[in-house]
Amino acid sequence: MQVQLPQLSAHLTKGLGSLYTLLGDEPLLIQEALDAIRTTARAQGFTERTSHTASGAHFDWSEVLAAGGSLSLFADKQILELRIPSGKPGKEGSAALQQLVAQSRGNDSTLTLVILPKLDRLTKSSAWFAALEGGITIEVSPVERAALPQWIAQRLAAQGQRVVVGVEGQRTLQFFADRVEGNLLAAHQEIQKLALLHPAGELGFEQIESAVLNVARFDVFKLSEAVLAGQHERVQRMLDGLRAEGEAEVLVHYTLAEDIRALKRVKDAMGQGKPLPMALREQRVWGNKERLFERVLPRLSNAQLAHLLQAAHQVDGIVKGLKQPDWPADPWGALSRLAMLLCTQCAITPTASGQQRHG
Image (cartoon, rainbow, N blue to C red):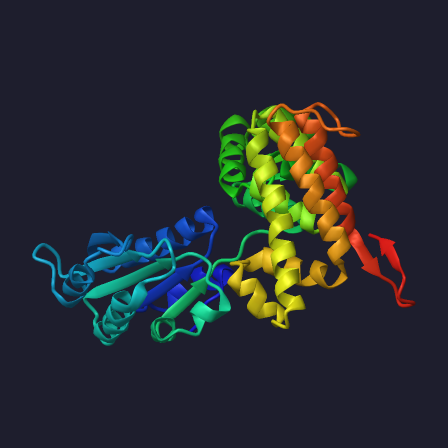
């Protein structure tokens, strides 16, 4: 049974299940969902909690099974939590998970919580995940950039605060979203800070600006997604933010160059007759990036990719202190040009007449 995150609270009021699987890559939302389940469980007498993290090939799965199949010495009811950070339990873990699911059926004394990262389609088709789906599954999706202002507004409303109505309010929320680019934890902290700094009611732009002005946490991996989506203005803003925060030029270059190399490898595999989904899977391209690759690859030629690879090679030299003809000597200037080269190619969309236009 699947439960959407917004419906979790209503679900818990109707009754607590014995097995929950939470999956996703947004730590704040996963943590909040876990807290909601734990709070409900504690109110129903689940007073003891044990936690296990399945990391590495030498993890002892028998400990988890023993915990799930035994009663606590100190409490009538217990919460058993199992984290699998890699999302890959392996052969032994697969068998153990299926046994753990079997143990949870009809077990009113143990609440089992399994926490996973976002999984690809192949992993979701595995026997162990199919077994987990026999319980209650909560898939936590990230808050996309376009939805972030509304998410912030909802969080403010929950603590009795709001921005002014109209264009000014939308500008305020957009500013807030820009400053916490891609980091819900940072946004959450700043929203909580606003509750401490100001009473319930309406917040003006100046109040929010002063609270969040220094909170930006630009993520180099979110930069990658913005480039592949062809979002020129956002890319430049993120580059400026990364530079201001002292991010290493070599990491930014590696991220851009690795995307170009991955695009080339997938394109080559397609040229050898491999279907696009298989080529993406072999290059470990998942999630949002998978969808972006699917959109961009069919319209990128081998010549364009070769040009981008050469550009990435030249910028590698600039980042390491070498000068390159016809390129900015400043590493950040060179990184900006490389990002915009790739961004421009990714922003080109075909028209109905078969020509191309820039989006």
